[in-house]
Length: 550
Image (tube, rainbow, N blue to C red; front, top):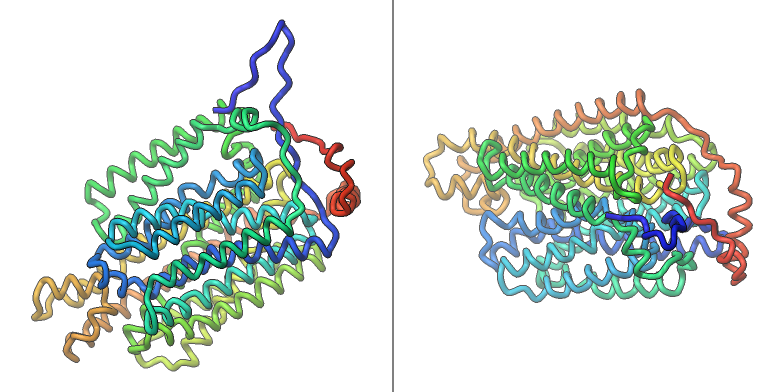
């Protein structure tokens, strides 16, 4: 835990302080910082999305069988568990140092993943990659928020969100090309030059403030017990949900025990953070703001919908229509292109008008309609329907993701900005984990009910449930028709649930996410100081005002 320094000869210790890293830069410097941040975020997300289409091939090469989903899960477990720590650690050690450490861990994990000779090795190395890769996009968002005023932040965060959409769209296509024409190992090695390039950009083009204090003082600010509690709770909760999505049933001891213990540790974490540390990992006072609660709920749903949609649409296209991995990835590309336009456009609108509430509400409404239409897809639907319905959901994703970041940052003081940004990313990741667990149970259960009466072996039946796309090639027309019908029924039920959740998020945002003025009285002063800082004036650094943890 963080503790106060000891007194000496009756003199009261000075309170521990965090350096305010706000540094509003001139436009030219902002662009260079922004491009470096976009490169960092894109590198991490490309890694996550490229691997999705390669899992069947990796399973075959390494003999993973039905356990292959753990390759993605290993990355997701560690990235989600560590997500909430990145904000406070960047407050203590500085954004740039934390970003360099994360990129180094990510680099080491990926180079090792590419050389993996066994399934267990790959799991271990992907878990290491997740520790670093999971924080790249989050810290990049925090840095952009440091160098741009709140109102202008919408524009830059919107464009940064476009890089997220780009990664989701291009990643599966690149991954499919490697699988079909080279080796899956290049999926990991491709990120290596990207990581080096991003690190170079960060080093040369990010004129960020340094954080006061030597390493002993910085270590003293870390809430070690709180960090350990949230790591344990996150790992157990994500692990239980991941097990529930494939390896075990919900009522199994593995799922039940880890879920209960994870829940108990979560309660202990909240009590600890509320009562004890000087610099908590998540200061509980931020939840006094209704917008923070609303953003937490809606971004959990955002993660639920986004991950499930990206996961199930390509799989459905491959199974129902017999499309190749590359074609399935290309059909998801229009969704991400529209998401890019919507994210960028919504950011520009926030900057121009100073308003975000209407964009968020419209985004959830449009997303709900698009998901409802996707639920009507069947094996006879045209490509126009497949693409057209997806376009609506792309608008929804773009308008609900980045504007919500401006909303939640605008509701809090600057000293809580990094923490709430990381918490929002954590909520989105948890939502994705919950989404895959619940929908995986639904789809597998419905698919199992369709194939259990078929005159096939138990091993083939289980193979179909574990990976219907891979099993497709060896099935007779009669069995294949039943498999497609079962998967379609599960797909339809899943997307009806997604549409309902999007509608629920609309009402949550309506009730909890009121509008706040994005102008702050000291914006002009901070811009002037940032201009001096960028010109190399050392006086600004001497005038830094540390922020106490009130």
